[in-house]
Image (cartoon, rainbow, N blue to C red; front, side):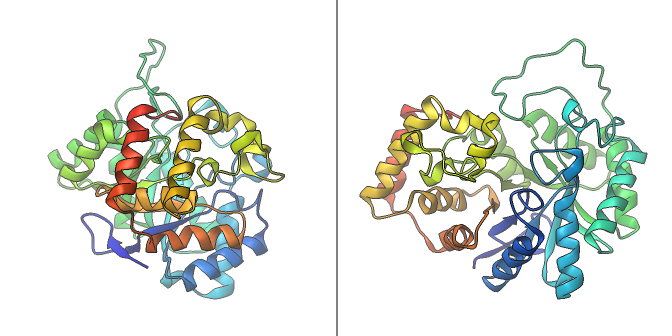
Length: 346
């Protein structure tokens, strides 16, 4: 395993991060425990979860994933071996069953206390805002379109004050953002620069894959220059970049077979691009999944790549991508395809 540190800290994390959002829906508690055991044996010490998980969000499944991780901590005694990240759900129509008050002080404290209880731990290493409160372009929206009905008032200072107080209490150690834009990222960083007592966001968890490299347009420069590391999620495009959906296949039990509303990864130009990436991988004797993950792992702005799997065999292949180094010829081939079909699944 390769290790790095969360920017601006001495917290050492594996370059591969274990994503957990299927646990409690597609995966049972026993399977979640099995994945954590296997990942830790392979040197993966960084786990990511959220109060919202498992996915898709539903009142009957709310926070199932955190409960599964918590029961594993209690059973295994491995809390001190894991760098744990979790998130507070943002304000949205599909999360009204969680709360409607956004990132108010009371909401953040309630969310942290709830996660700590379910996770059966005293602290969370990295606590993240799952997505912005304001209306902006995240979750598949490529461009920003202003909504005059958005009455959001800039409360970033107040949010950071609450997170600062939770850090002082020892309940969280570091702060991150997720699904953010360049404007939002710089606002968070600006606030902590101007007010030295406020915590600094050290990471940003956004989608990044061969099918969605929009992070490079504005955020990659911010990531490098401001030292705020990308935790890349959906690096396989919900499994599309394994090639298993090519030829209009819909494998039984696969994520996009079960949840077809996430179809941006398997329609239109996404299919054309995936086919070309598949052919490139075949040409150089690589699996499409490992080529796709190795590309993400190699980017200078990526702190850790969040992988998710529903089986140990998938998890084994994904973790092994850390040992794959792409040749200049493969990287040139990837760029040629990207230039021809850029970002088909933003």
